[in-house]
Image (tube, rainbow, N blue to C red; front, side, top):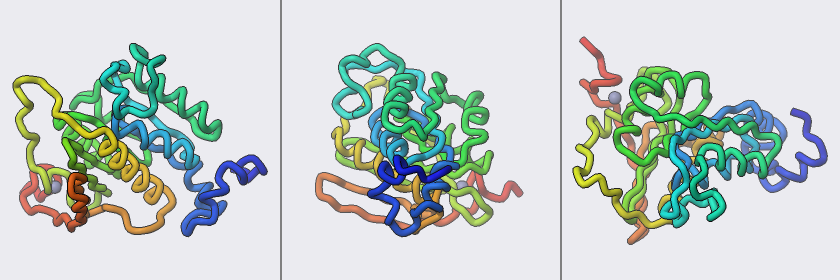
Length: 250
Ligand SMILES: [Zn+2]
């Protein structure tokens, strides 16, 4: 990617960062990031990844924009209600940065579709909003060897964990072995809008660091934040012997 005067201006505020410069910008341009879920987590993540100059952003979502989404899903406005989230989000990416190729994927992510959906991407951000999808995505990424940035939110809480598959790495199931049973009422738990925003931003930070190979990511670690008190902690996540996904099958 040639650093034209326009790109020098576009990326002016990040080019001077450690790990960036024209080399870092080139790495971002060559990187592909798949964001699964264009909701409360995906909205800020997608917007910041486009701003940073990620070369290709895949946006997976089968839903349309609801009025109840606007309290936290910052990519959308009233004009988008009823539209496909993946398509509307891709339009924002194109409007922000012509260097970024936006790839909308209108698909349900399940055990059957997940392996094909995550294949071929450098990094996956799991910005889905159900436990079921999260386990499907983390399992598929582990098996495909694709780094995934997992996140979860609820109420005033949020957590982020990055998984870079490898023989010594812990997987998502090392920490959370099985998905909890779904709420029989089918109701979604309440969440403070900006908590989704800050956790989605953390996922974007992780993706950018993974793409340029700078800093210490949350690989092998879990960030947990209670934003009602601002108690934030980062703890090591050991590989769990006997893990059903990454453990020794023997
Ligand atoms: Zn494991």
